[in-house]
Length: 433
Ligand SMILES: Cc1cc2nc3c(=O)[nH]c(=O)nc-3n(C[C@H](O)[C@H](O)[C@H](O)COP(=O)(O)OP(=O)(O)OC[C@H]3O[C@@H](n4cnc5c(N)ncnc54)[C@H](O)[C@@H]3O)c2cc1C
Image (cartoon, rainbow, N blue to C red; front, side, top):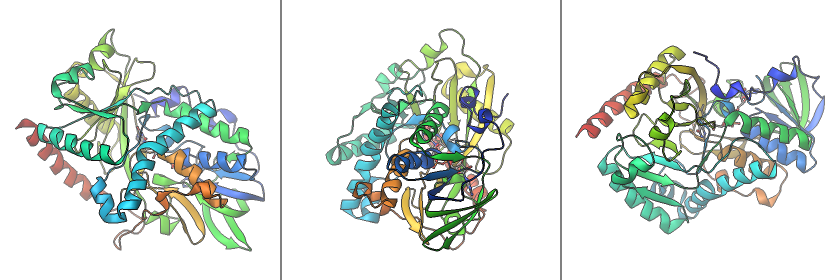
């Protein structure tokens, strides 16, 4: 079983095919971007198109982080209920967040794929969100009615009796179908975004860890593993991979691992039996399994919370294989070809944010999703850095909070893991009733 992401088989992060060591760093530029994932490369593209001299640096290789490790599902939405958002940010901001999350970010990402000619197997497959039990189904149907009053969403409920047209499993009590959500090949998507940034004139450098950014003259001095760069402005785009060198950000970002597996090629006919609707699938139980067919339709790719503490990829594969077998008993005898992991970047508010700390910009905190939101907020951050009013977004009004008990190490994740295990057992009991 391979432990690199399945997506890297035919779209590996840059450095692999570009030769190392990379070219010499420039002494100065207009903007330095720290982290060359979807956020960083989308920001680089917008800045370079506007004529800025942009340098994007990655400690590993451009695209090495979550952007080429993820499940490849693309859609909108956020984790909190609209009511929770209204209580936290007020009705007006909550409404703007809703529209940007559900509609604008997805439209933007899809237009970027189209306009830049990014060949990433993008397709509007639709997303099926399986409801864990009947009570959840009814509650979700009610909240969908409320959502429809606030924003034009293209979502329908799928009652249990119609579920088999979407997914070959009886594990869920019906579901929700988000018609506009899609799927793509994350490796090709990320590499396409990086190449588009380069075509626009941005310079991307791998193997260049940034250790410090400090004020210097009217701008900043960026200290890297390979020398210093002077820049007028700096954008941090490090999300779940933010390092303790940036203590204020680190205290606001919680790196939560998500794990994935890919199966060997499925026997003839199995893809049609298991995934008749070819949907991107997620579920409402605390395990948060997400699964799909690979873009060539030959394998199943499933992700989920195998653990929140450190575990081996052999162990996470066993856990995820067990969950896959719960959803589709026919897959219990299948072998796995790949098992890998990556860091999502959670915030205490579960919302992403664009802002500035000590004059240094940041765009991050996607809290488990990001294929739509990361390029969108990268673009918005770039516009804001240039003082362009089109950069206006409600995500400057969200909060990047910390807690006094969180410094540099997320010591509390193993405890959270235990709490989730209790929640998993509660879920199982709720399903059994
Ligand atoms: C396993 C997994 C599954 C997911 N599934 C989905 C999904 O199906 N759909 C979806 O929408 N989202 C999904 N996500 C979330 C999504 O992948 C992320 O939100 C998104 O890729 C974030 O992009 P980013 O560019 O902000 O960060 P990343 O892609 O993580 O890039 C951050 C980069 O910063 C670099 N870096 C960090 N510190 C430094 C430093 N000091 N100097 C230089 N470089 C540095 C890192 O090397 C890294 O390459 C998933 C995430 C994971 C981990």
